[in-house]
Amino acid sequence: MGKETDLIRELRRYFEEYLPNTYGASPNTVRSYKDCFRLFLAYVEKRKIRQITFGSVTKDVVTGFLDSEENERKCSVNTRNQRLAAISSFAKFASHSSMDALDFAQRVSEIPQKKHGKRQVSFFSKEEVTALFKAPDRHSRIGNRDRALFVFMYATGARAQEVCDTKVKDVLFGRDGKTVVILTGKGRKTRRVAIPKEASRIISEYLDYERIGDRPEEYLFFTQTSRHMSIACIEEIYRKYIGIAKQKNPKLFQKKYTPHSMRHTTATHMLEAGIPLIVIKNFLGHVSLQTTEIYAEVSQATVDKYLMDFNEANYERIKEANAKREKYDFLR
Image (cartoon, rainbow, N blue to C red; front, side):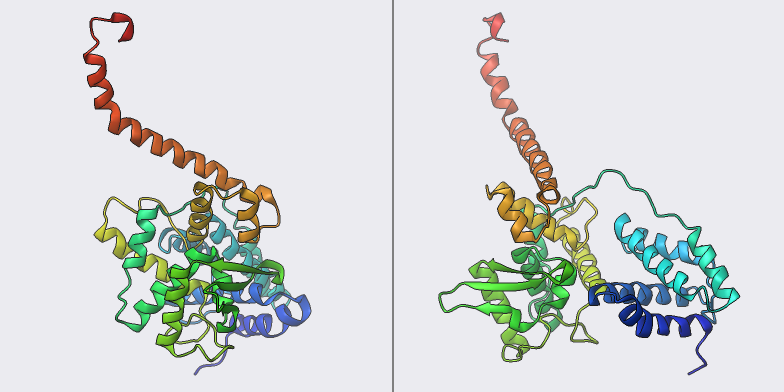
């Protein structure tokens, strides 16, 4: 293994000393930033840059990475901006270490956050949710995990990071058949979410399959290299199965989706089922009701679509009824 370059050395200090000790970043922030740099360094290596130094990572390399996140990995503009924020934070930290690092920080500071219009909420239809549930191969270990992951996210409305941090001990199976999941959200706030019996059964079968039901400190979902899943891994899982499900159902999956789309889906379907907005707010762990109100707009759009489909389907019958009354001009 070769000698660490200046950039890698400072990156190590940034994660091992600055973020946890000096800055006091939350574990979620540290994990999010680590996810960003794992992806960033992998991208830089693909560019066949021999040494990853402050001098070799140009502005074009950083913007190329951000573009690839948005265009190839299909991340949202918000995620793209979060990646840039992570790189900018590191650049400011490292800028005092050398002139090359200062130049690097200057280059990064010239990259603007990408603007986006009114927040668009992307959610799966009920047919798309069903297609996703069917896509994983239940006879393989990974397929079994991925099916349980989809069911868990739909049943709890959990954020991707909350899913990553859920441990076996956080899934409480009651004797009365009720199952409650304890989720730790933003600001380390916890909330209790009751899940349906069918979702409970699938999660229970998954725990038995993995033989971790009696290991409370284990994380609920794993990767092929770690017992602690990352957000980047969840993003890859969604990309994989949306592709598989779309091949089998070409008319479905016409929007741009992320793992957060499943959270939007749960909220939207709850609202359409008549559950009050304030209940959905508490279920999702929103601080403000205003954050939850975006789903009311989505639901109205869904209602409009259903009405349009209904009208189209019934148009011919209306036309026939009118034709029988042609002698009455005033009824045309």
